[in-house]
Image (cartoon, rainbow, N blue to C red; front, side):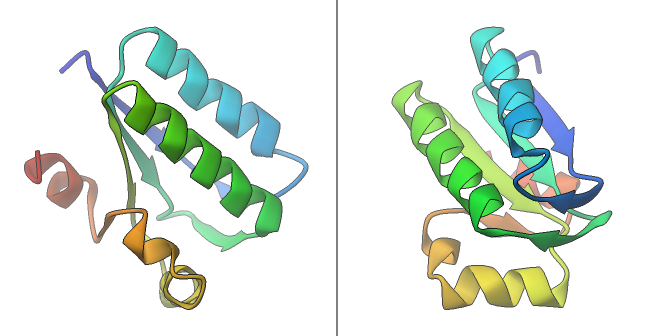
Length: 103
């Protein structure tokens, strides 16, 4: 299970915290994580810079042979991913357990 990292987004994923968020995940990948689960259960908003961070992280993980999965998106966030067609890029799961079971 050392190849799994779970990152929780508290509040919003926006321009002011996206760099810290990205670095947390990049550090985990550098330490061997190949499955990164990003939990949005306690988050209700992502701006365009947050979406951009997720896209670049997804690419980086795929290049490393890994996967980025999103869990706990509320209805608004799920709609955002559907409208931007990013639901095709990111596997979306209801819970952490669902994301981990899909291995």
